[in-house]
Length: 173
Image (tube, rainbow, N blue to C red; front, side, top):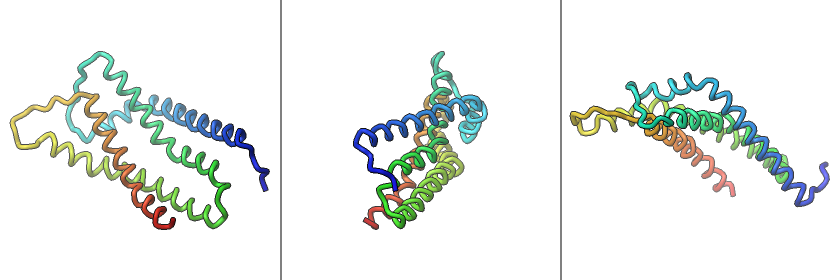
């Protein structure tokens, strides 16, 4: 049995969890940067056309942003694990088992939603939006606009697919 911690010990433990989570994000962002070409090709392949940049720093900023976003997405399970490690002692054994099921379901739904959005929704949305109204227009999409659109869409789907877990938790409460 662990001894009771003081308020300051809890705060210190929380600080360590935040630091470890930030280090994981930084480390995975650096790894993502190493694979920036593959990540860029993967993200832009549903567009099936060239992108344009309109400022000298646009490509640099977008690759930096993409690396951080990839690092955050990859670090998601580790961050959840760190948070769970901090909160687990608040629950009894049966509650822990239930919460672990919810956490695993949440991670599965998050990555499943991102995959669904990437393979199904993103290509359909791009086709619909670019060809809207069958007008004789030539799309000239900027790198920044496309990456922002794709990233927001993928993250939004990842978060929206968390809704069933939230409902289950609220029902159990």
